Image 1 (cartoon, rainbow, N blue to C red):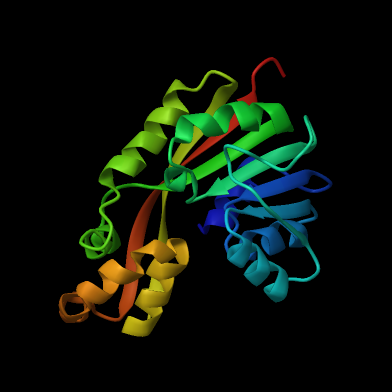
Image 2 (cartoon, one colour):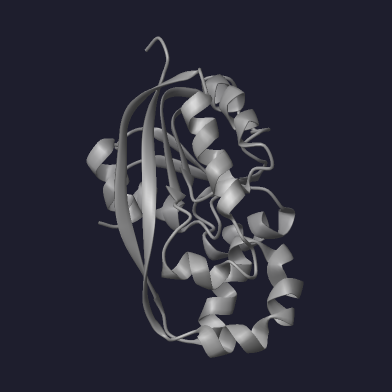
Length: 209
């Protein structure tokens, strides 16, 4: 199953107000809208918001972060965080904000620190600790009840070294200098093709609802 298929099997988003936090270029926002949601996206830099708006002028994109959302209290039904919680400097700070704005559910999908793609990325940005911190924050938060946890795999098709670079830097542009330093070695290790990424997703429900 794809990331979106996993979400769709857990939550019916039709007619729901859904915010995708850390939305990138808006791909998940567009998928949510296609499934009948009133969807909007949040990104942490003005450049990222501008890129999302340019690519997708039909939907709303706003500047903000998981720890400081530009949304009114109890204004959305569902929040999704797709591979984004581990990028929050202190992921624990996301949950009070999520509790403030979300009426119903939160869906958090995180890559696990394992697999061939993780090992390829590791010299550029070893995410072992930040991914573990994200899982710990999910386990220890108190504002939501955990409804279910699912583990699944997604397959990335990366056909060229340039596509690899684009994917790695799109997730975090600050990796550019380190990537350039290690480029020769990465080229030697990289093989075009499919990379399986192990994932874990948690469906949370606002406590007391």
